[in-house]
Image (cartoon, rainbow over all chains, first blue to last red; front, side, top):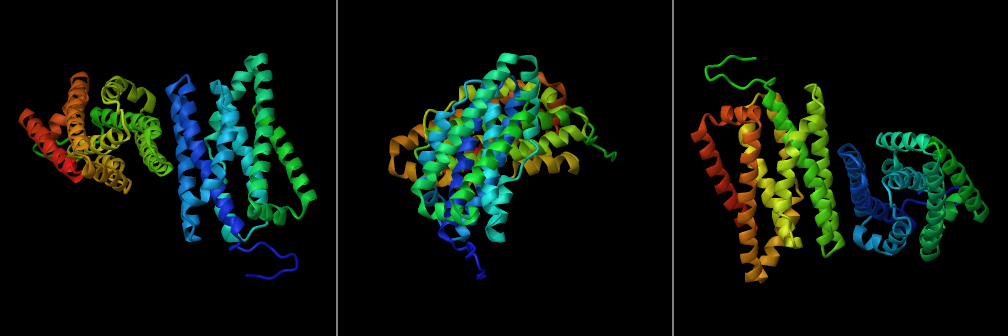
Length: 221
Length: 221
């Protein structure tokens, strides 16, 4: 409960519950998407790599569930407002190939991590630590990078197709993020408080586009 | 490397690799089955409970993968001989309702745990600890017990149907276990060495049927 000049966001800000809840539903939907998309894997090795990624999403969900419960919030009630936007994101970016699925995992996770970690930077430590913990990059991404890089090195048309796919993922993610913010005043307040003002938010989205471009480059796209 | 009267099984027995491998593929197939069956869940709460169970199967898989690797075995090569039998078990016991899926999870896991822990009891500690670790009961079973008990208390026909279902699960599990043993001499040697002789195996199967009946009773069946 510090009281600094710029009215920092306190741990008990109701937007924090929203933040944990949207992250929690994000983990659940990623879990089910990944296990569904694993069917596209041409190998058992690929299926198992995906199962491991999915399992770490559930570990993150359990962290968030505990954090919500520590705030006196029920995870299911708290997640309810975010189900529609996240389901819409996944429905609008349903991969039709194994490589699209891998790019979506890597790029989509990256976009989300950029957004939430920037917000976390201006939140109290106890909140920021939960957010950073559940967004920590895992070694599993290495698997994705190798799969995609080797595929696009040998096929120009695959590379072009996946480049467009990556661009679409960014667009859809931003659309749904804006939709969520428009619906949830308290979360918007948190993001605004974190970014400073609307200009700050514009700058945040620009930084996200830069990081996105870097991630695409890592994939060879 | 003790040298007792009854020629105890040593840690470097090749059947141990088979044992870890069949357990490992069991975890993978349980993972994918559970996430597939979660679609049958009428609630988000049920889906998440199943996702947590699935995630713990993957943690167990990672333990077994590490144990196989410590023995110089590649998990994928080692699992290959067991894919057919385990896939056949799951194909022949494909649940058509959420409750069947829950019973299968609880009862199937229990049968497997009985079988493997009995074998583990006569294996060297380093091997036995891995087996016990991956078979340790999780708190998630509580969810299953509550779901099934409350459903069968209110419906006699549901209870009858699930009782038959449980019996079928036991039968199929034993069929596939026998098939695996017939194919894998080294694993059979391990089981025989652990049970003493064929009479010991018969006694083991009898104890498994008793435990099965107790588990069914816990579910109200």
